[in-house]
Length: 395
Image 1 (cartoon, one colour):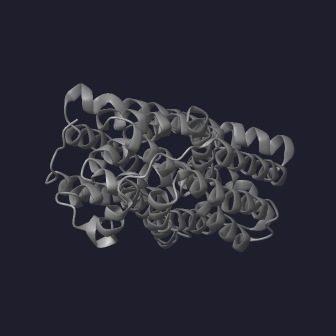
Image 2 (tube, one colour):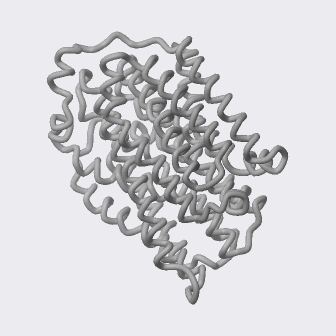
C-alpha cells in the first residue's frame, strides 16, 4: 500500500500542476494560438466543472470497485490523452477540450487516497494525512510556476506538454500495478444509505458545504489563472517575474496545507481553526482589492498570504468527513470535494465574464483587478458568516 499511496500522491502532484499551469502559459498561448485571458478562464473553469461533475460517479466507483481501477483508468484515459490534445492545440477550443479530459483524469486521485485513509486509519489523524497529501501534491503547484516557465523557454510549450502526457500515462500505469483496494465496508448498506439525497440530509453538514464551496476558489483561481495577467498588466511583469511571484504563492500554499493538518488536534477544534484561517484569507483579498497597485512585492506578499490561509481544504474536509459513517465514506468525501471543486469552477467561469465586463478601454487595469479581488472576497465573507452556524466535531 505504501507504493500505491506514493503513486496516488504523484497523481495528485499532476492534478495540482494541471489546475495551475495556465497562469504561466498565458503569454505564450496568447501569442501562438490567440488564447485570451477570458479563453483561459473558460478553459480553467471547464477543468473545475468537469472535475466536480465527476465526483459523484467517482464516489460510487470508490465504494463499489475500489480506488485502484477508478484512479488508474481515469487518469490514463483522461489525463494522458488530454495532455496530448493540449500539445497539439491550434486554438482555444482545443485547450477547452484538453482541459475537460484532464479534469476527468485528475478527478479520482485525491479522493482515492482519502478513501484509503478513511478506511484504514483512525479518524483523529485524517486531517493530518489529508493535509500531508495536499502539501506534497502542491509540488505540482510549484512545478507549474517558475520551473514550467524555465521548461517552456528551454524546449517550447508543445514539447513540455508531450512530456507531461508521457508522465501522466506512466503514473496511471503505476496506479494499476501498485494500488491495493481496502476491504469494502458493508456494500449493501452503502448502496442503500449513500444516495445523493441521503448525503444532502446529513445533519449539520450544510454550513460546512457552503464554506467548502467558496473557500478554495480564491487561492485556486488567482494562483491558477489570474496571478499572471494581474502581475503583467498592473506591474509590467515578464514571464520570469510572474514565475517567481507565483512560485512564492505556491510555496505558501504548500506550507498552509501542512500547517492546517495537525491544528485541529493541537487546538481541539476543527471549526475554529477553519474559521480563523479563512478570515486571514479574506483579509489578504481585502488588501489586494484596496491596494492592487501598491507594489509588486506587496502584491506578492498578499498573494502568498492568500495561498497560506486559503489552503484550508484538508481542514474543511476533515470537519465534513466526520459527519459520514464508514459505509458512506467514498461518496461522502467525493460529495464534499464536489462542492469544493464545483464552487471553484463556477467562480472561475464567472470571474472571466466579470473581468471582461469590468475591464477594457477607458478602465484602468488596477481598477479591473480591484473589482476582481472583491468578486472573490464577497462569497468568502458570506460563507464565513454561514459557517458560524456549523457544529464542531470531535478531533
